[in-house]
Image (tube, rainbow over all chains, first blue to last red; front, top):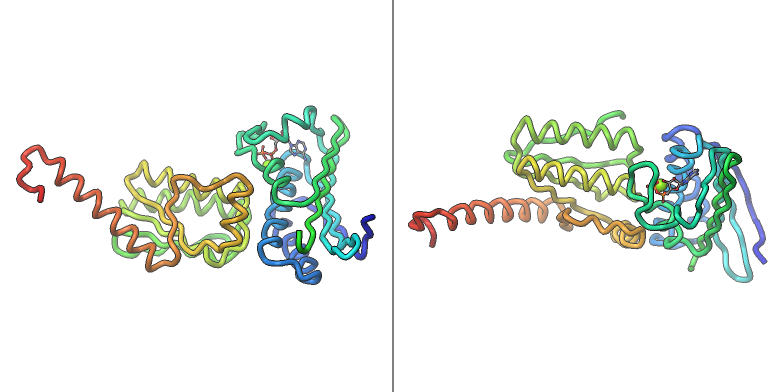
Length: 137
Length: 135
Ligand SMILES: Nc1ncnc2c1ncn2[C@@H]1O[C@H](COP(=O)(O)OP(=O)(O)O)[C@@H](O)[C@H]1O
Ligand SMILES: [Mg+2]
């Protein structure tokens, strides 16, 4: 069971919000003594998801939580937008697939960088991506 | 801050990125650098990212773009000071920055650039049809 120990929400509407979100994640990651490499993986993953939200989802918000499961502490991030949604998630998860003429590494790369990855999307309603990085995962 | 300064050092251009870039700043840097390479016919570009803690696929692509555009303009790009955590993350992300030379610090980066440029000069000499200049 994953328990939530702290929770706050950051609105994401402009690219400068990237910096704000990175700083917030850094704070919570340091608080649970996450190592530098895992911090870097987590913040890079968050950066990718935030970019997608701005670019494809018309912006949205990110919920930043400290979570705990047994003896493990971690950071859970939930990115939610009310954009157009993703018609074919399996395709979007493929390395190199992009409808935006970019590298197509954001979603598959993020999945590789974190411990838990979940994506839900409905065409016309929006997209939610949830990731967890454990402090020593 | 809305521009990253580009320093000229002889044949080389040096850029020190002091902050984690957001998109517009990175795009401006890309455009500025390519302009500068054109204007100064610089032989090498040194990008110091030792203060950068996050490079995502967008930033990685910009670094790659700078390198490939400079190459077309006959200039080599060396990225120096990449933090180990950043390097590990880039590989896992799936972006190993192919075609971009890296070095530990500015000094070593400079030496690498110099040696690459010397190599080109040597090649020119060896390819000389007369052959008299080759060692
Ligand atoms: N929040 C989102 N809303 C709608 N579509 C999305 C969203 N995130 C990703 N996508 C779709 O998934 C594709 C793959 O995303 P990603 O792996 O990050 O690559 P890239 O951003 O380079 O296109 C995008 O091109 C886009 O079509
Ligand atoms: Mg993306």
